[in-house]
Amino acid sequence: MSTDSLRIGFIGAGGICRSRHLPGLAAVDGAEVVVVCNRSTESSERVAADFGIPEIDTDWQRVIARDDLDIIFIGTWPYMHRELSIATLEAGKHCFCQARMCMNVAEAKQMLAVARAHPELVNMICPVPFQLEQYIRDLVRSDLGQITSVELSVVSGANLDRASVHWRERTDYSGYQIMSMGIYAEMLNGLVGPYESLTAHLSTPIAEKTNETGHSVTIDVPQVVAISGTLASGALIIEHHSGVAVDSSGRASSITVRGTKGTFRYDFQTTLELARPGESLQNVDVPEEKRTVWSVESDFIAAVRAARAGAPTEARPVRPDFEEGLLYMRKVEAVHLSATTGQAVAPHTL
Image (tube, rainbow, N blue to C red; front, side, top):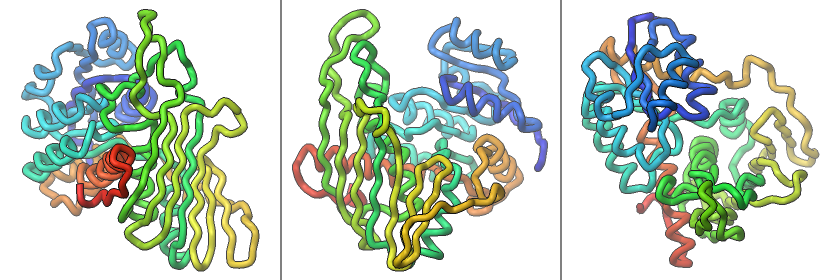
């Protein structure tokens, strides 16, 4: 890999940025984070001290406008992703945007339009970190035959705390995003293809919580989601998402894909089960070399270096980019539209 020097500005260095992106960038030769910009001076100083970043700022516009930066990493909440991403690309800088992509389809289309206007620049959204994602993609394509049905269940107790309001429970920060539904929408698009049509029902069993100031807050982000529909391939699909499971034994995530030649079940961690016709599900021992290793930061930097060397877009692939992001944002918005209207919605029409 080329070690051409790349200077990076970081805007919004929260949890995954501290645990993944900043350590990942530190391991890439020639990639230097030179400034971090959080919402407060104190927060910026803490990140700078922890990761040896030489400069801080509290004005994101000033950071993006700097002539000495090549890349902007955006780690803010979704409500700022559109504005920051567009400003980054229009300033001639490569753009890495934390998931989820943005608030709604209109914002996603605006982001994609600017990205298409700047094909010389790399744009990327943080991908799904599932260890066996590529392995099961290959499995679906080569071993299962025609896909007949898909069942996705994502259950946790993440929304049970009534004395705390997470930013993901606020539509002014999250838009149409619901829990981790957008992440799994991206995964489904890559694994079994997009929805042709869907019907959704939403519920918020814990409708009020107490915030950090002791005031009662109405929760407007759904905590339980039921989705059913048809994929573009013709397969039927059912999804269940819940953040209010009180039983610890029920808190788990899994996907089951059934085809004419086989069935697999994956828990999004390490357990993969496979059955051929007439067989029961059996554990698959996936070799270590087939497991996906986190390489998000090095992959992005490699794409940027290829772009700087003049490589066309197809020769510097990253995923998901804003094109793929629009696909899952259509599904996210279709869920809300269906629940609001009581009608089936075709995401590709949005």
